[in-house]
Length: 142
Length: 421
Image (cartoon, rainbow over all chains, first blue to last red; front, side, top):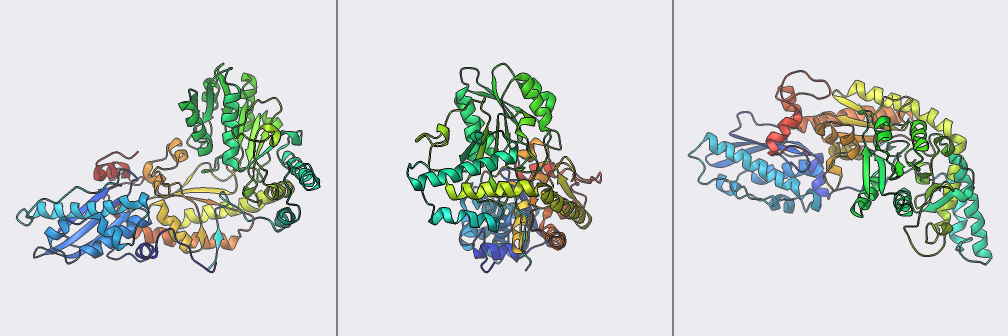
């Protein structure tokens, strides 16, 4: 075949084929693992936090191409952010940065947001003085 | 890159001789079969010849028992709704196997909303219809039994002779969806005592755009598409003549090459499954082992700890075309109802892909697929939290339990806060 057609746009495919920040973090400061009841996907995000800022992030995902791409993009986006900034992170940022997801796959980006927030919650639980406010858990459901 | 098409269940390439036979019906013999002039009468002849070819493929007595539709979905809609409405006064109960194609399941669901009732007969873990349940499900109000010949997902070949015997004894018409078997396995409508049988040429090297419904003269159906009196008034609408001509020739070729086709793909099926089993740990074949209970074209695989759409996409990026029954590839986010009906663990249904072989596949193709798929599984497992958790003993394997850790489904329910459906 001379031309390659793809199910997702080129940014999503690129993040699926060459995911960024894939793996686990040794001595992570916060780890969040969440599952999507709708489809059965599971996402895990690990964070390294220093001086109130996300220094490093890693993901592992059991899920489709857009779930893997969403977690890859989410970990890219949140690196360098403060805890407060990260707590107001929205799945829409992932969708926008990926150049859009098919409507039925929007929940993959929601899962990435939830995994990140679960990791932040875990960090706050371990460091009660660190979090100025509880993570915002409301999210757009797919 | 090597290109390996392993989705023959969805489509097959049109044979060159079939394409040649179709061509003049687009340009030269473009007439409408309903017209009464030379142009119409000529294509009427072509229609008749195609009906004869279709009838011969399934052992039907006469071409008058063959109706043309647009595809398999339309054929099953006509069979189910057509029989239900035609026999409304006799009774409003239907019996279907739990693993029928969505075109059957959803037609039945539609009828249930209109006041019919339906019994869905369960299957064994290998996908075989439970004959005792089938027999018990038939009541005096039952007007139709629908059981497919071969399952579209897992390739199980149903015991049609026994199913036919039960329906004949209970005097209930039997509709057999042969979409996954026609052109590959022998079909004998009389041996089964089938009232209706459907199949589509695009599954056996014919064109898309035509479906076939065989209807025994004694079986009553009414039209579900209304308009002119094409197809004996059972299916209104202009016939797709080029596709019907091509489909007829594809049926004739299939009849000649039936045993040759199976003899060609059966060793490849074995080689593919044996290869994958050897190279990919924690992989499961859904449905019967290759052999008399399984069509030789189909392998339905669950690779544990990874999800099916990712497998499909990476196969595709490596030139390998496959299908999947995982929830991620369906717009409804639900796993294949067939995998649900055979009682497959949800996590395994998530890691599902379907490979269907065809005439053009070779041993070299199969070896490439085995080698490539092993790499794909390794790559996706390196990304999967489940693989890591399995290796650390947090969760256990369903395919080969180690006795340590909780089940994947239990773990998934805990992290998602809800049980998996």
